[in-house]
Amino acid sequence: MSEDQERKILHPDFFTEDPEPRLIAGRCKVSGNWTFPPYLADPVSFQDEIEHVPLPKVGKLHSYTIVRRSLPDFPVPFGLGLIDFPEQKVRVMAQIEADDLENDLALDMDVETIVGIVRKAKDGTDIYSYKFKAIKK
Image 1 (cartoon, helix red, strand yellow):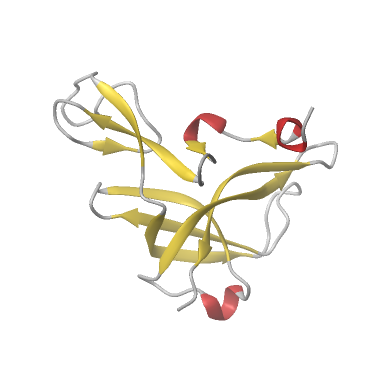
Image 2 (tube, helix red, strand yellow):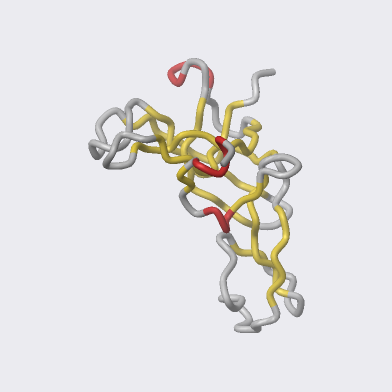
């Protein structure tokens, strides 16, 4: 079994890593509305013709905070932000990585979708999921 198959992954249906990390959203075929995570029906039009479509790799940082105290399984500090995908009208909350959390994050900056460690399991192993990384200019 490869290392990838042995990784513990949180919400594996919400993202893909092949060929690159991308969140998987739901888009209503009737109304064109997007949701993340993908819902069974469009919460606006109530239509249930939903297709799963990848969001763009890059989003905009709408808001963020630096978490310094958290539950024991979440190593701190970490960035936690709201990331906008304006064309799809989708906003996602997720962890954010940066080389320097204090100085590398700014509102409206570009952030890219990555897969990384989001927490520890009770046995101490890493749990992976989607998160975002600050794009330096």
